[in-house]
Amino acid sequence: MSHIILHHYPQSPVSEKVRVALGIKKLAWRSVEIPRLPPKPDLMPLTGGYRLTPVMQIGADVYCDSPCILRELERRVPAPTLFPGGANGLAWGVGQWIDGPLFTAVIALVFADAGDDMPPAFAADRGPLYFGPGYDMAALQAALPHTLAELRAQIGWIEERLATGRRFMLGDAPGLPDALAYYIVWFIRGRYSRGPAFLAGFPNLCAWEARVAAIGHGTSTEMSAAQALEIAHAATPQGPTAVDGDDLLGLAPGDPVEVTPTGVSGAPAVAGQVRALDAQTIALDREDARVGHVAVHFPRVGYRIAGRA
Image 1 (cartoon, rainbow, N blue to C red):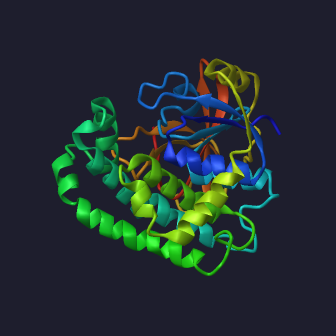
Image 2: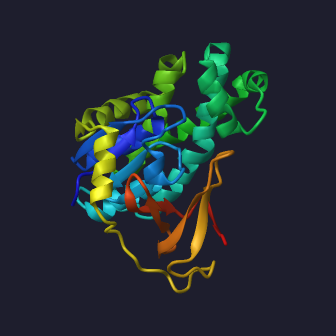
């Protein structure tokens, strides 16, 4: 397998989820630090416009969104598994809760807590992305007690799971649910001004948090964005090319389509031709002057696929 290259930045909470998964699998990987804010001129040639973080690159195959990244890591490196003792399938559903309403509540908490102290450029970019155009910071601040009450209840579910005496969510070995839950706790502790005090009310969670942190992130080596682009240009896509003949959208290989994230506001569509398609993922063939021929992979959940002329 070619080098795993993760395009990310240290403060990215969703990237922390993937970094923990790399640690669980004890993998070596290359780290390309990308800007926190657009423009991202050395990432767009790979993704075709997808701007969210992180992105994983393996040769000329580019994986967007953490569920797609984690599924591919499990496919390529099945041991140590992200599903020790089972939970295959169900853990992806847990991820939809954590990445959806739970993460949205944490983002609302962080924004409301920071208020006017949040860097204006960051607020101007992320606010509309997560809360829609014309979002209201004052409304987020007014709702802060409700947001905290919702969060306490949901974090309490994780505390209940850990109160059973398990070292990790699925037993004695860490897995996908640990990476999923950990990044939320990591984000609250690091970005909410009262995060440590809030989390102290969950003693089993805090003990588990320390165990997950001790796993680490595998072994990373820094790489420049220019090097990553050169690797893509010199490679050819190696991912699957099979297309599900029973796909509900009736798509076929080579069909021109656009793929758009549905969970964020104003995210651009990525255009390409259908390369591979099944119930869980879609891959598009794309051409770019800086990287040549690449395949860009997306999850099906959370994305809308539309044909184009």
